[in-house]
Length: 245
Image 1 (cartoon, helix red, strand yellow):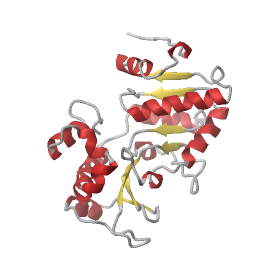
Image 2 (image 1 turned 135 degrees about the horizontal axis):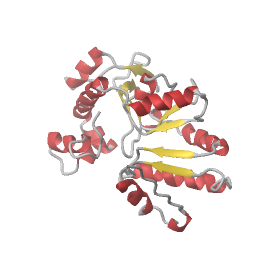
Image 3 (image 1 turned 90 degrees about the vertical axis):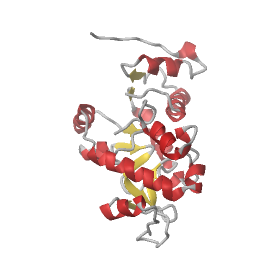
Image 4 (image 1 turned 90 degrees about the horizontal axis):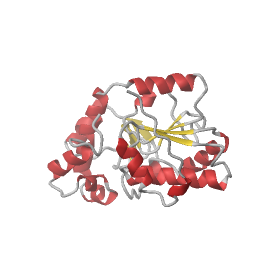
């Protein structure tokens, strides 16, 4: 599935298709509110791509480690739903509080109703309806506003994507974690930087900064540069650059 920030990624495609100066604008709630049907149709294209994507070795490795009981929780910013495909259970504060994967930004394979919070799996009929830029009625409350379960920037309906309870769970997890791994994150997007800062703040408030180290696992040099240039207390960061050939 296409990355958001890559050269031919989702932001670039959005910019070309919608003829907007910055493709990131399509992923804002204000743009979604103005051109809802068109954005839903674009997301339907993304879903088709997600359906064709396959789990990478990293997904299978995560599932294997989770099966061994070595992962307290897997927080993902991906919206492709591939963690669930490889058998990892999905967290929900009410329905499945012990789920291993927390989808921070939602799941492109699902629809959600902002009115009643009902979550529905995507069907071929629903995809075709959205590509035709038509609304889909919620089967639970009959509201004509089912939307893709994907978090947008400044999303006024964000609580139906990722409830605030997730941060309570994060604090509980950090209380017992012995290490936090940031795997494959470039820290180009503001959300990932904010999550990094939040984890550090929570660990600091718990007095666990030394007891629970964080490691960034990304072969790209940009990841290290982005995070170092984004934090204000650089002196507290202990960077170990490990490379293999």
